[in-house]
Amino acid sequence: MSFDVLQQKIELFENPTVVGLDPTRELIPRSLLIDAGSSVNAYLKFNRVLIDALCDIVPAVKPQAAYYERLGPVGMQVLQNTCDYALNRGMYVILDAKRGDIGSTATAYAEAYLGADADYAVDAITVNGYLGSDGILPFYDAAKKHDKAIFVLAKTSNPSSGELQDLLVGENRVYELVGDLLEKLGADSVGEYGYSRLGAVVGATYPEELKNLRDRLPHTFFLVPGYGAQGGGAKDVAGAFDENRCGAVINSSRAIIGAWNKTGKQGDDFAEAARAEALRMRDDLRKELRY
Amino acid sequence: MSFDVLQQKIELFENPTVVGLDPTRELIPRSLLIDAGSSVNAYLKFNRVLIDALCDIVPAVKPQAAYYERLGPVGMQVLQNTCDYALNRGMYVILDAKRGDIGSTATAYAEAYLGADADYAVDAITVNGYLGSDGILPFYDAAKKHDKAIFVLAKTSNPSSGELQDLLVGENRVYELVGDLLEKLGADSVGEYGYSRLGAVVGATYPEELKNLRDRLPHTFFLVPGYGAQGGGAKDVAGAFDENRCGAVINSSRAIIGAWNKTGKQGDDFAEAARAEALRMRDDLRKELRY
Image 1 (tube, chains in turn orange, yellow):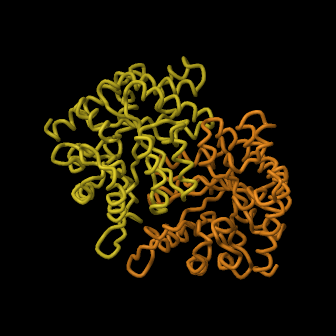
Image 2 (cartoon, helix red, strand yellow):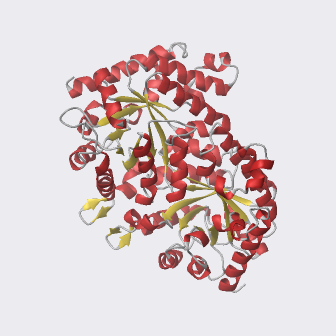
Image 3 (cartoon, one colour):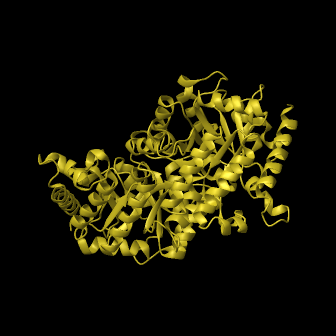
């Protein structure tokens, strides 16, 4: 089952990290932009070299759709090729697209990313559940049918996430009720490690909420953004894991793919710098999780 | 200002309709699929012929991103060409993408669709505001900078929309608080007709909520899905308008672009059938709104 495969990769590498592939022009070294001929080729080459540098130590990558959509239709080709390349290198691929719509339209999105003939074939996709279960189930049904998984936004990592997500409904916060819905809907797909195909996005920047949700949602796998550039550390994410160190994967994007900015070599070492930072993050997490 | 332009087009045509361009294989007549050579060409031709058939009676179109994403990178080219074609024919183009993410990523989405160099140049985009104002403001800032507009999901038209949107926070529903946030954030961009660049999506399938929101949010322009195939009628949407018949645009998708399914001519008349249904809807709305 999809999250079982991810969990197995995590255990193999003793590293619950997912690296965000969020390429911007500023993050791509100038020499690569010149060598690659076109800026679109440079984006793809940047991703491929990063995947090669990381695939034996990091179990998963998470391309963020926005950075590819911004490049127009050719950007979607880069996204497609990036996902294919990462899958071929054995990585688990989570597309961060935060899609969400009503029934038939959600089905179209699900076919684009999770279907048998999906143009963008990935292992999991992020979903925005504001439309309720109508907007979640088409993705979840596709996930069950094609051995995939989804992550629905519960408590996001950004500063204003509380404006809606923390609203108090009786004695519960909105994000807790979203979590409860995921736990309930996912009950029919619990795998070997105790987690369903219906995961949740819960930010590292709210460690207390993260720990509370872990206790509240014992069968919901977490995708945890906010480590690194957004300010979260290993201590902040520890609460995302169960007593077997399972149930979560921690994302870092810019801190890893832009690590070359801190080495003073104009990006000629971007792959080595990314690997070094990924190893630092891995060791940071290992220490906190007592691997 | 963006919604002023839309309102002027609506007044010119005496028709507050937006036609959803949500092409599926089933909605494209077989003869068109054969003639066009490739299915991707058929999608584009279908849209172009529909735009030609509608652009002198309907002020706006709303392509739904999911149906183009499902076709892979070439589908995004169809989306791009469709938006360009509709703009060239003088239509107001609303891209229904329901994007939403945290700051820097939301900015990337905004650049893709609302920026000066946007690959997909449209007049307005739909946004999912579950992430709070961090997820809305990058789109809104781009809209203000480039004379565009956005619609944020408030109360959607689907059956389970209430699961989250109707939750009671003190004495208010979640969707009402989302509406209040839009009214507040939009206060600095109110145009000639009294509406800001920050609109809301409010479904026709909940007419009472629609009327209440109209009263509550006097400066928030509404995009109203749910008329036609989803079951709403002219009476159900009347509450979306202010006393000057301003402040809303009503969407119909399948009922118009798939109208040929009801004429028994295998789709050879798809353009005429769409036009006839668009005229019927226009007259239905005109009657209810006493044009």
